[in-house]
Every structure is written in structure tokens, then in C-alpha cells.
Image (tube, rainbow over all chains, first blue to last red; front, side):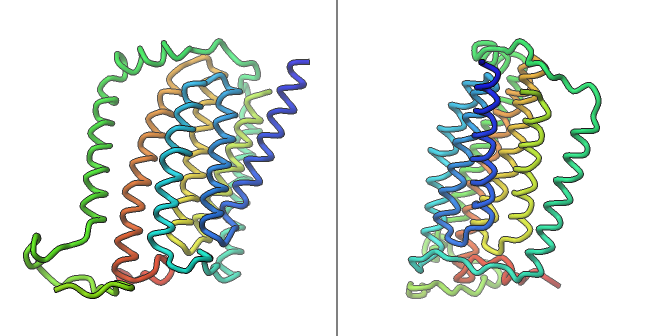
Length: 189
Length: 99
């Protein structure tokens, strides 16, 4: 009974994930793309729960649907002034090539998965969140600290890249600037 | 559920993301497709962790998640710079560096 429920649940979630993923790569409205991406990421959290990884599922929801989706919506709205947010699709030849690439990759991966002998078929005993935390701060503590440095560097890099260059603060920038076509803003300097 | 099902799901998701990366001309759409691929990889890691009974897969997935977040932050900053310098974010038109 439990296993039937698990199978039905898995296939339902898998269908939701794959359909949403298909919409992510085909929808032309960018806001809808980001929302479909949220659907994929949320459903993946459900799969994580089915795989007995509740901590990862929570992180997935907090970080992705809470953080990344908001960021990407900001990105869409800061860079698209037309309210339809529709994008121009690539020409059909590029799309055909991309589809061939995707299908070929899936074929290779599926062949590799199905041809691998001795893949475990039964779930093993699973570590709990307490064990995860202990491993984080003992065995993997160096990677943990390096990761915090990486996040700091990413934040600083994002600020440096995205802030406006102010001639009064920065002085004259050496070398030729990128010719700026600031839409809807008077040119400074 | 066997491990194979989870792996096939992740492979399909990865291929969808690859199709998106290759076909999307828009920078934000491209970032969304990259997210799909990273998500598929995480799914693989967690599935292996579950079926091998080891926690290292989950730890690796957590690290990968954090790095993906950093990547999206810098990627969106680049998109905004691209928009500021060109007025649009179509990657097929941004070929100033092409020789």
C-alpha cells in the first residue's frame, strides 16, 4: 500500500517537474518563465522530502523560492520596460539544433543510467539533520569557511558590477568607456 | 522507487535545461535554464545519498546550492550591466567581443 502511494506520488511530482521545466524553456513571457521555475524548484523540494532529506527541502524552499525567484523577478523587471515582458524567440534553426542537442544528451544519459549494473534499488538508512550539522562543522569545516568567503566575494562583486558609475566619486575612468545607451535617463557627465 | 527513476528524472530535467541554454536568446531566460540544470544535479546527489546511505551527497548538494545562489547573484548583476550598456539583454546581439 505504502509503495503504491509512493509510486503514484513520485510520478505525479515527476510529471509536474517535467511539464514546468518544459514551460521554463519555452514560455516567451519572462515573468511566467520565472514563476514556472519556482514550480520546478518547489516540486524538487517535494522529491527531496521523498528522499528523506527534510533539511535540504527546507533550504531549497527558503533559498530558491524565497531568494532566487525574488532576485530573478527583480532582474526581469529592471531589464524589461515593456509590460508584456515577452522575448523574441531564436530562429527555428537554432531551436532545432538546441532540441537535437537536448534529446541527444538525454539519450546518452539515459543509456548510461540504464546500462550501469548494480545500481542500488533499495533505500539505505539515512543520516538525520543532526549528523549533517556535525559533519558540516567537523569534517567539512574548511569547505564551510571557504564557502562563506565565496558568498562574501559574490556579494561584493555584485555590488561593484551593478552600481552606477558616478564620475564625481570615481574620478575619470581610465580608458574608453562602454558607449552607454541609458534608456530613459539623461546622460551624466 | 528505485534509484534509476530518480536518475532518469534528473537526466530529463538536465536535458531540458541544456535545451534552454542553447535556444534562449534572453539573458534572464538563460539564467533560469542554468538553474534547471543545477537543480537536476542536486537531485542526483540527494538520490545517491539516499540509496547509498551516506550523508556526503546531501552535504555536497548543500554546498552546490549555496554556490548556485552566488552564481545567480553575480549573473544578474552582469545582466544589469549588459542592460545598462546596450539597452537590451539579448545575448545573440551582444557580440562586441567577437573578433
